[in-house]
Length: 164
Image (cartoon, rainbow, N blue to C red; front, side, top):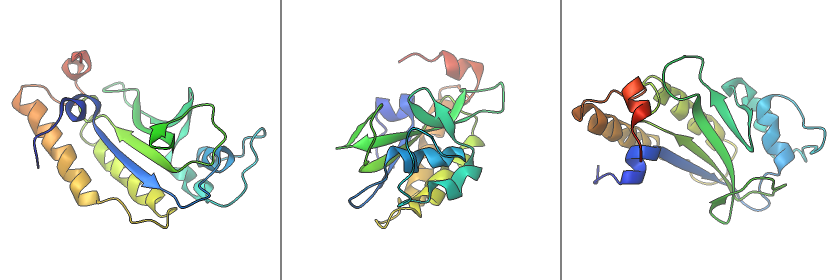
């Protein structure tokens, strides 16, 4: 893998899943929580509700899978709606993409599998080419190796204290 950037080392891995126009609206995306949002009925063009078993919930203005462990970050996987290449909040959609983010440094290594599961599952909602899971796994491995070679175990209390 090429040299890692400071952003990759500290913020982790991001994968965008893009959609053809019209993309999902907020009501579609909210279905990933397992129920309808009464203020934003889903148009039904995207089956995010079929992936409620991934465990996403609304966290602040975005969506995430909360950790079930006291170790590592509070949120394992973040999901952000994207318009014109930028994460948006308080936006009804349609969205061009969704961005999944996994902070390798601040999460326990076993949580990487959960992130990759989310990427694989949610990529099925797009007609566009699926993200390269092997390349994403290699990026996660390279970031993990970097921190371990510096004496920091991802998801440890030391990892949570690394400031950027």
